[in-house]
Image (cartoon, rainbow, N blue to C red; front, side, top):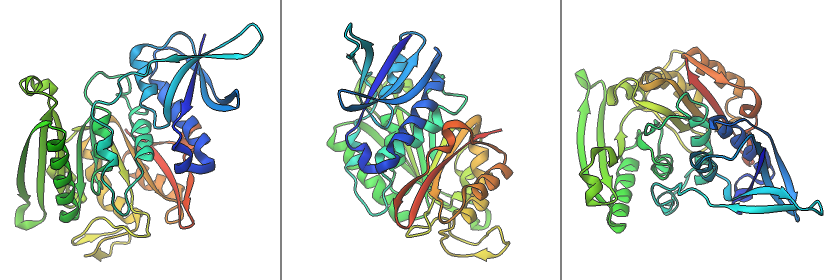
Amino acid sequence: MVTYAILANPGHNRVYFDASKELSLAELEIASQAFSTDCGNIRCEEVAGILYYMLDAGEMLTHREVGILSRLSFCYAIFTAGTADEGEKILRPVRKADAAFFNPSVSTILKYSGKTNELFTRTMLNAALYSSDFAKSDDRICLLDPISGKGTTLYEGLVCGFDVSGMEIGESAVHDACVYFKNYLETERIKHSYHAERLSGEGKSYRAKVNTFTFASSKDERKDPSKLRHLTMVAGDSRFTDRYFKKNSFHILVGDLPYGVAHGNVAGNWKGPDGKSSTSLTRNPKELLAACLPAWRKVLKSGGTLALSWNVFVLPKRELAEIVAENGFSVLSEGPYDKFEHRVDQAIKRDILIARKS
């Protein structure tokens, strides 16, 4: 048996406060499902007055598995833990895998009102991926954020090595995100190409602008199609996700639902769960999901997962789980999946729901 100890990022408590332990343990437990060796006894333990997150593995973790630990949202340093003759804990550092496929600064530089914290976003990505049937896959993961704002989830996905796609109803937000990303690529001298096209449905039932960046870190990599990376952002209505993307295109779908405080999604003539038509943005996550989940499900691969965060004060978890289950998903609710709730401020208590496409 080998015991691993993870030192948490110093900024982690700033995001979650008293809930940081529970959330970190839940993320670690879900990630350990992707290991080839048995892991257990996941816990917090102090060594010389410093808190570490511990797990016991049946054998030494592989380079790939150390990479999984390295990409945890709270991971700052990794150690193996042993015991000295005097009974004291001895920690030996483990080299973190080079987990950043893209410079992590891409998601931290851009600042704007309502931006989801990068560490929390990484938690959602990990919970989604390691709960899916693709947790042990060597295939490049394709991520979709159907309510992507200015792209924090997409940028975090690039850091993890994913191909990423997002949608946002506001064309100005998508424009700002594309301008930012293009400037970032040019500043970092990353070779890239950009393509834009407009889509429209019969009778103008929907209209969208699709922006696609293709890039690689060097000229040599650009010559190899398998090395190319892709970021796509669609300015369009999320109800028509299956018109913008092919069916069964994505391994994971991750979104931060409107909290009912300052942000809205979905526009145009659409009907909410009460059957009434609306022509404005909705801040109600239940209305948003009723309108969009059928299309979201179509573009998600079988065995893929949906990860949604939302404000529990606006919609109880039981109601959210019911509407997700009604749309063909199996909601995961046992063990670590019931430990993500935490207070953001007086008006927002946030939680994460994970569901697998049946």
